[in-house]
Amino acid sequence: MKISILSLFPHMFDSLLNESIIKRAIENKKVEIEIIDFRKYSKLSNNQVDDTPYGGGAGMVLRCEPIFDCIDDIKTADSHIVILSPEGTTYNQTIAKRLSKIKHLIIICGHYEGFDERIKSLADEIISIGDFILTGGELPAMMITDSITRLLDGVINKDSLDSESFNENLLDYPVYTKPEAYRGMKVPEILLSGNHQKIDEYRQNERIRITREKRKDLMED
Image (cartoon, rainbow, N blue to C red):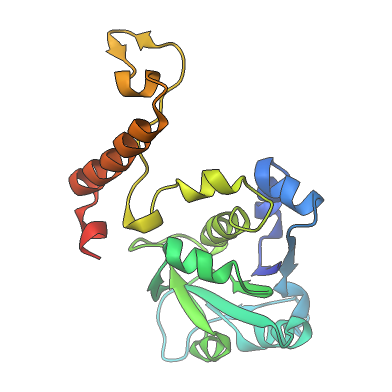
């Protein structure tokens, strides 16, 4: 899989690409991630990529030309273009799994006051990570990239993926490690029993209980 991220602030992604699981996934050629500074596609003398909005108003708006030209340069028949915007579909694990099957994902990060509306005509879909405002699309792009990369074959142990939160619309079960007792809090006896059938039943029941208590909306979905 290849992920191309269009951003005016490419160095924001340095830590993402050079730490932990994503770094190993890149080194093992499970994913290719490129960060493109679309300011390089500006045709203006000062490399300007934004301008004041027609009709007046606060802030600066991203111009069409640099982003269209960048997309023209990198898009292929396998590309799927995502724009990050509050108006989009709220991101979740189901979307992450779907996007992880795409050969070439292009993510466009907004900044300043927003996009020229015509830029949205490039998008195959628009995604939001929640009902709050950030200064740009870089952090959401990192979150989406992380959530997708870990789903790719060979990046994480399959058993770990199968037992994660949001599988079957349930949260994950509680986990414990040594010591067995700490500050009056003890590991549940069933986990010490060695009876794996009973442990599996306990964990599934705990997933249901925790989801019902903390995210009942998932069970309703």
